[in-house]
Image 1 (cartoon, one colour):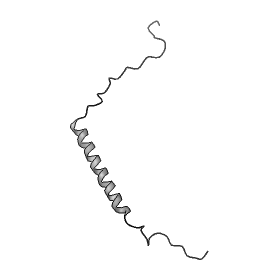
Image 2 (cartoon, rainbow, N blue to C red):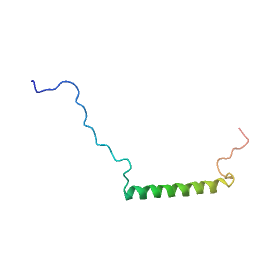
Image 3 (tube, rainbow, N blue to C red):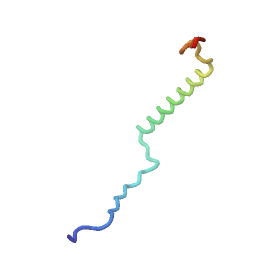
Image 4 (cartoon, one colour):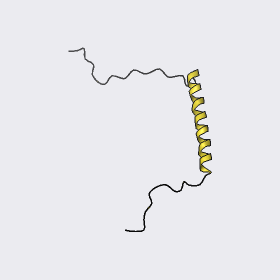
Length: 64
């Protein structure tokens, strides 16, 4: 039984990724996300200019 090794085995190291590596799909995806965020922000600004929505919801009577 001398074939067994004692202690923990170290995990294999993964190769480092290139940090500045971006392909066309990533760039297109980021551009699309930025455009969607810009549209959403514009819509939020447009909606915030209006007053609160009135006339909806549950109305309570004065009785108990």
